[in-house]
Image: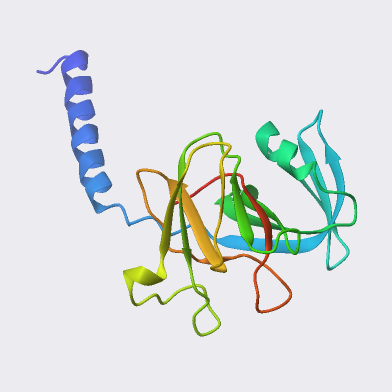
Length: 190
């Protein structure tokens, strides 16, 4: 006859063995869904680390960002054109990847406001998309220490932690074929 502690231990052993099998069968996580909102800058609230924009659809959207991002965004004024690139984290939560100001620079200028050294990759706009690179020479590779900037004429980009990589699937938004402006990196994803 088994005692209660022995039964509990046997159950725990079976539970652990089953969970390792489940972990091994777990599906590969999908890339995070992303989106872009374009509009105009309404307010930068430094004490609350907040950004409020008015979208092209007329909605007001508010974002809470790191202070290093707010410091960069505060350089711009009410009414300036703006876009916010974000990732859907689930449960209605979103994380801002970058905040851009089209036309504010002659070429895309990337500012690392993430607080970490990141990998920035840039590439061409091929067949109306930021994807489909056939040669490694088409992709620019940059190591951006926190607080640093770099410029590159390629209109497509992505950023990740320095240990990981990404495919340049974000577009440096501009209402024309030429990408321009300051792009403040907020949070990089693989």
